[in-house]
Amino acid sequence: MSPIIQSASQELIKPYQSNITVPNWMISSMEKVMQFYVDKNLRLDTISTDRMPKPVEGKRYMLYAHIPFCHTLCSFCTFHRFLFREDKAREYFVALRKEMQMAKDLGYEFQSMYIGGGTTTVLEDELARTIELAKTLFPTIKEVSCESDPQHLANPEFKQLKGLVDRMSIGVQSFDDGILKMTDRLDKFGSGQQTFDRIMAAKELFPIINVDMIFGFRGQTDEIIQSDLEMASKLDPRQITTYPLMITHQTRKSVKGSLAAPQGEMVNQYRQILNHLTGQYTQLSAWAFGKTNDEGFDEYVIDYDEYLGIGSGSFSFLNDTLYVNTFSLKKYQQRIAEGRMAVEQQKKYQLKEVMQYRFLLGMFSGRLSRKYFRDTFNVNLDTALFKEMSSMKAMGALKNDPVNPDELIVTDNGKMIGLLMMKEFYSGMDNVRAQLRQPLAEADM
Image (cartoon, rainbow, N blue to C red; front, side):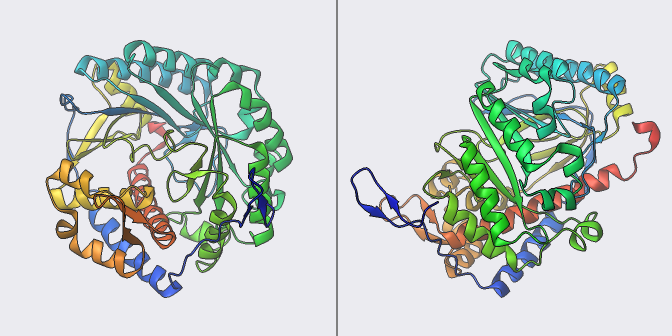
């Protein structure tokens, strides 16, 4: 972006200058507070269950489907995934479609569908059949969002997804070949230029292309960040997502010691991202940017309070209860063959815990609303979460909207804090996944 932009009216517009003033000691303290709450509320103190609840009339639901296969496994990823085997993957897709029918038989309707992984596009023909069935069973689905890696964009079979997927998110991470080599992605997925060319060719296939980037790698200088942002902007995608590198208990040794930049660099890198993308894009969340402010993005939990997950390793959140599907592929197939859905654990959350969770999402999305808390929980946000509201205002993260007293403005400080809070939350979820995967044996594949 040039230092000065000439508008159509010939006025000079200065580029955006983010106002992040939160000191590093405060960020470190906030990180410890979030780790405390994450450890407290994401404990695996679940109880067993073998069924999903029926839907509640008047509620909106999103359908999540998990594809737990990848051709290669990245060292910094702790999502639920296995090395790809075609026979296992085809069996899995058949079972996934049967579980989808079970959700329909329970009475669910969905407004949106998100397909995550793993790598969702390991078998494009099976994925296409699965989406076609979803749209047949649930004609109320308005948008299907999906993930892929750069390598699959070059497959001729990828074109089967045209007309079925509304939003395709591509895991780029970086266009810099040095970063790609350090993260073992250069040989797996090709160079930054090859990825750029593949995305450019795939843009015509989907209404929304999202380019996923990661910052916080060791050796990722300001120049590399700037080059990555310029390459992403040159593609002119509908969305750009800029995740911070997340360190979990399981990846701490391999990632923190070899891949992660010092914690103090995160603020400067995030400031650089805000300065570059603000003005070109509307900020959808602390790390997601879109051409418009009403399009779906990766953090579907913001738009949907309730969602049902199908597939091995999926989570559902229904009626203030977290439901966990089996992480064993063997058990998954057995349960579906017996006519049962994959859920095997549940955990009920108290009202205060649910409100804190929605407060976190409100900070992260920049949509913190007194009206939402009043309508949803029948509480006054300022008193019900007095400690949380007071601390955010003291850090300059929140201020009252002078136009609408029901809404709150999340400042640049608030975006930084929201990013940090969500990073710790997702790291906690990754720890939960890793714990659930730990007992798996070879037979579970």
